[in-house]
Length: 465
Ligand code: ADP
Image 1 (cartoon, rainbow, N blue to C red):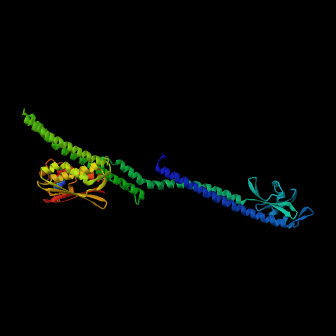
Image 2: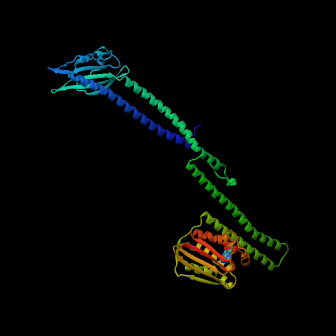
């Protein structure tokens, strides 16, 4: 069954239509060109005969006489065969003055010309044979005197044109067959890798996302290679996303399991027997802390998922960066004071950037919060900002515990916590820097870190100025 909607059918169909139309156009051109050339040859011969004859016509006292009777006996005017050339001469009143011998004997009649001044060529059909008739008016100084009619059967030309017509029709039929079958075979060859790709793509699902599409054909067309490559890249992205989702599910379950287990144990213990109010308050405090931690984790994961899905709206407006940093410091002042940490601030008074105030605020707050968290009592934190070419550069340095070289590449990963993080910050989730990084990405900025263990850490945030 032919599928009329298939690519193969459509390509072959339209290609064949265009090819056949072009073929017919060329055939018609050849036919008419040949037809005209061959008829022109007959006309030239008839014209030559008529002109020759005209030279032998004499006009005397109003009548026409043929001066040379030899003309009547010339074989082409005398015998009746395929090469016969018939003539008739009429005066200006269309009275027959002379007639060739062969025409006298012929069993057909050529209709008389309708006017004495007819000129040029006419064609009539006698018993299926085409007779070409040429008229040459005879004139002298007194004007029109009569007319010479020269005619000849087309014979060979008619046969040749008939043969040509048949050959052209046969050639057209042959071309249609070759184009549709040959075209079909060629298109099939080019489409077969496409079918392979569809076949393979149909079989790939969530379970075998590691498989890739390959084309089993020598020298496949470029477009097919590109299509296979694009699909493979798409599969790669899908595979990565699937892995991320699996990792995400694993991470969240794992991280939430700890607070939930702690809460369960606490509640179980306090339910074992009647306890006094102080004990219950203590249990509730533990539960409260763990619930808060769980909420923090869920909120952070939700934010990361939204940022990845591109559904967090970024509202750009002009923000005075030093002012924003001052507000960040203000929210963490009490924490710094509690640890006797000095927060130094070193910025030009006005530095404007078109950015999202809230996102940048949260990102910088996370970094400063960490700086205070991971710096021992009596240490210091310094925030600097400056404009460097088209970037606004904000650096936050502390004199804290520093990050080991083996931790450094991973600190922006979800749930990753440094080796010594637990000592200074036992309740951390390892999500702060992952969030910060995704926030800076949303602002089309960059974040980098340098650190030396025991000496301190510097985070550098750059956003478009
Ligand atoms: P958390 O602070 O909850 O552990 P983060 O994602 O904020 O998670 O940080 C990841 C890790 O990076 C931390 O566990 C810590 O080891 C390290 N870190 C971040 N900021 C600093 C800093 N200013 N000084 C030292 N270590 C830091």
